[in-house]
Image 1 (cartoon, rainbow, N blue to C red):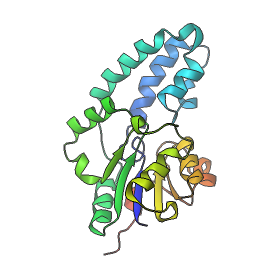
Image 2: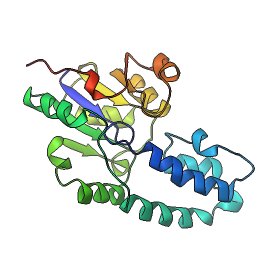
Image 3: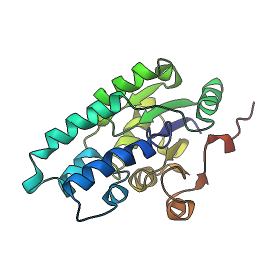
Length: 206
């Protein structure tokens, strides 16, 4: 492994339960006819969610939901997934390049930086939605991360939790580690080379 590429929500931060609360409220308001819709949209980008569920008659509500989401993210808790901080610092000591590869936008990242001042020092690169032409499950984002470091795809390891993210890493031709923080182990296993519950299960060789 020459580069470790991490998704953000559900991989670096244990934020997925908070998003389930947010989207649960929006879905009950705008789609009461589909109980549990927040579970169906889990792991999708905002654009994908809007295109599938908030277009047509609900098009005007997108601005309302975006404003609510921005406010929600400003006040979220950004707690690291167990073992993450020690693991990523260990990789950096070994000279492994590290990057965040996320569909989150810059306003969201500003909220992260405000809550976690040390965040930027953990990564050599932070790639966000503004850096990609195509969203996960397209491999575009992970291939750009590899290009950023001048490293071959087969020398990169992707850490993901969502189905779209796992498919993206696999399509990029990279080794994929799936975190069972958002979906069940058995559900993500076919899309991974390795499945972990959290980073405490991974050891750094000194």
